[in-house]
Image (tube, rainbow over the protein chains, first blue to last red):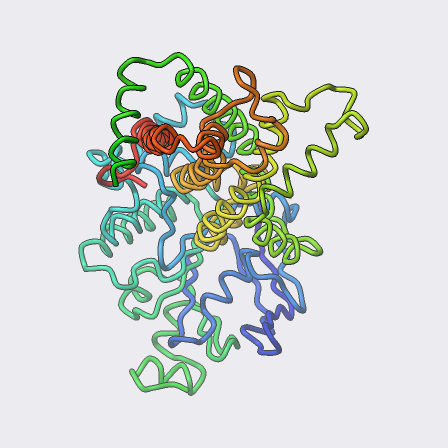
Length: 237
Length: 234
């Protein structure tokens, strides 16, 4: 069990140019499960994830990990909705995070090769990452985040605009990582994916958390009118 | 038109016969400009990367000054270096005036702002792309600088080549600090200026063609060595 949890978020808020992007958020996340952040476009899902990860600075409140905060930063990974590829080969993209940790080159290379094979890019190790397809890039970004063995992995709509096959592959990698103990916190607006993967759900609208409950409860008996409307497929404003 | 043709034929014969004077001034041109380029790159590239990833007071002003200095008049640079290196100047004791070292110093001062500014533009674009990813990977500032420099290396090569182009074609500053002394500080550009002054347009044109050919050859060689413009590469 990760020493990073519980993650206590108290009154956390991010504002930019006078506009509240997210918050105030008051929730506590435990060490197990897969948390799915859901909500319509522009609800604040990305901002919430970036706030928790520390990319977005807080304007109010706290995000407190159970361990040392610097240590917590080192034990996290983040996969962006639009994967950012280093202008290097597939293998070099995978080696990069290991090189940051000063892992010896031969070991880093071996681990990178293993991961390239695991995500189905074994034959494309020498290709430039920037010329891969969308699905391949997202798998590579995911592997690059997981290769460090993070305790917590944030993913911002990792399957947005991917085809069914790529989505299935990415979900399989996520489920395997979750089974191996990586705590996953991700956003999606694909309700099917949320039902398949989530163990708990954060429903967010206008930057405010409207509901935080176990997935079963959320999907069966949503507590708020907005969540019910969203699940019914209505336009939620 | 006949002078142009005559220049081409003179250039051809100077090259074919490996004219000793031509070889000497060509090699000195290359030595001065490549040395200046190397030193300028060592200063400019890390500096450009630091300006890109660090936020500090007066950063915008510094960038604006750098951009303005791209158009620094070489004659003014030459004059300043001349004053600094002349016997009465603060560095007069070093005895560098009218030596290739003085010419290198002047060229470094001319091309540093150019390379820094162009490099900064490329690095800034890449930084926008990499920013969140590098922060999410908990990288140190030094690691960010290294990553940006490595991944922008081909764009930085272009910046360096722009610096080379400015340096190899420069005449005002090196004429002042080098003095265009035969067998000592005469380079292609100062030789062209001299021959034009003497009225030997054909030879001046010949040297000009050689200068252009040299600049193209160095560009091609560097592009070839760095494998740019190949499929699937940056």
